[in-house]
Length: 141
Image 1: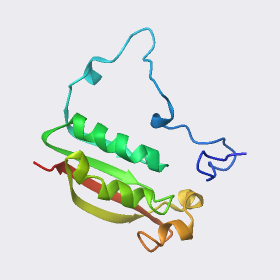
Image 2 (image 1 turned 90 degrees about the horizontal axis):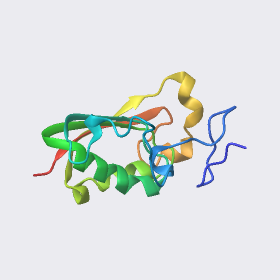
Image 3 (image 1 turned 135 degrees about the vertical axis):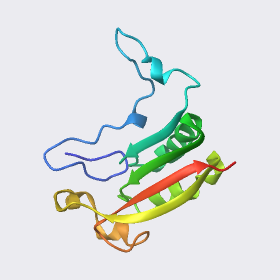
Image 4 (image 1 turned 90 degrees about the vertical axis):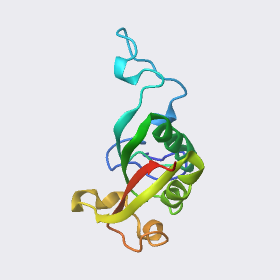
């Protein structure tokens, strides 16, 4: 029926969204873990597009960014505010993860993706139905 764990709907014609944080463990197949994702590896640029659906994902995503972002690096994250406080919690939680929000700007959503947004969700954070938030993070220290 397209229902998500927190009562939202998936995309029309598809089941519930599958997300990186919905899996307790991850396997990489016969080849094993890619060398660039080895433990302790950091990156000058971390990009995430539409990674958040639920409150339970906020802290793990922020911690992942903090661990994988190199000193002096930049993280760019595009967040769709589907739930009224998930995007707010994500931005507010940056400091606790050792990150600083450099900017958080609102961008218009393509008309084909408007069905993902609900006015009651967006008005509490960005004030418009057709917005996503593009946030830029750096390490706080």
